[in-house]
Image (cartoon, rainbow, N blue to C red; front, side, top):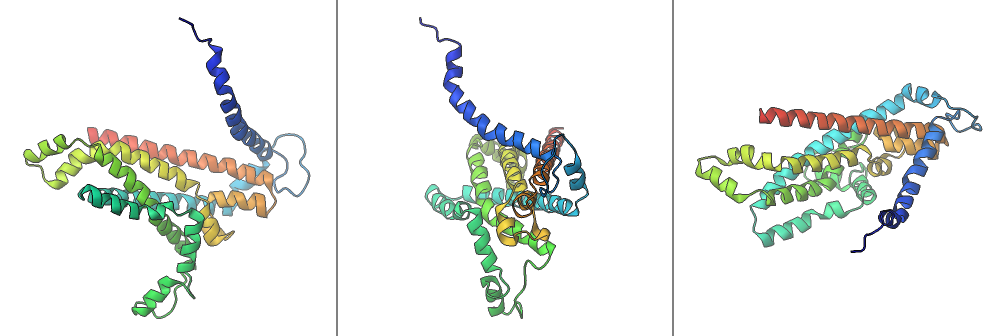
Length: 294
């Protein structure tokens, strides 16, 4: 039998590996170079040598810390609500027959199919205090007497972003949770019911433990996506610091303020914040999982 040379698989993979290296390593190396350069604000030519000046300025930037707070609150609030709503809607869909479930699921997935920029623009129009449809409906039914500026303050900006993200991403969580429910063995549930377990007990002690890995993976993906959210904040609020997330902060420093070194430092710091939040999330999941088993 002819034996394949050991180098041939690597030769076949070489084009893809080189392309991946060019797309990932080159920007990363350039970002590291800019972040540790002597050009914190991009207005003077960079000097030779490495420095931590960009990071020192960043740690004292109140705008950066406000973006960190906004991003973390947005991610935690949106992902928690989407996970709970997605699981609840999946349980409801599970009770429908196959044909009806397919139709309802297709309609539910429409918000998820809308691009984030389009969704942000649509919601921006609907929530406008002068001509928005939300205020028009509330005025018509007599719930309010004048138009409400939904994004007048930092809290309102954050709530609007969370609501829009819930509207758009909950169908994704529902789809993943429904797929997990389809994989739960029916004989286990039937045995639990025969033993006298109530509906809540079946869900708490049978369905949820079996569905837990799927829910955690889905929540982790959504958490990563929410922590790097750019489109909603950028389209709804632009460079307004009150509604700025970390990704928008990086883009603002590089594009609008012309500070590539400072923007690169904030990008690396953003990567660190995301890694820290994900590690804390995974730690909490691990501790919770161990506690439920004991």
